[in-house]
Amino acid sequence: MGDHKEQPLRVGAAVRRRRRSLDLTLAVVAERSGLSVPFLSQIENDRARPSTGSLEKVADALRTTAVELLAAADPACSVDVVRAEIAEAGPDPRSRSLVRGHHQMHASEFTGDHEAGREFQYRNDQLMYVADGAVEIEAEGRAYRLGRGDTLYLTGGVRHRWRATVPDTRIVVVAVAEHIEAVRDRKR
Image (cartoon, rainbow, N blue to C red; front, side):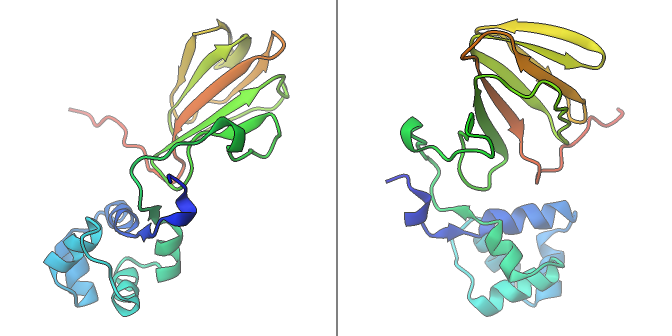
């Protein structure tokens, strides 16, 4: 239960994300694909599962492929538990992903020391939370010392680096996923 491998894919969210990223209305996609607006709405809301042919028409209308839409599809579950003992390890054995699948939010946990010289820059906003221990984070020419329970918010695009200053430090990094185009405040 809660295992993505047991769940069918929901392509609706991927279709909606792609359509919105292109600033297209359902009516425009309907015109380009030859499918009806109500049917496209049902696809986006996962109330209808498109056939392979229909998915290909939608993909063409969205200037992508059916394979890309399926790759970006969400598993058909809205609640998922990631158990500590079987969590997906990150590229470093001291890190693990806290969220599975293709979602609007990404979260990772880092334990222990970290390569202090490595610089990070994420396209979207992120929050760093110190679960245990202490860290020093350098961002925009300033150093910030954080202890257990402290958080640091970084706007997308800010270059930063961090290092643990206490053994067995654990930090949680929560960020808007890279596939999401963050919307900047518009002038009023």
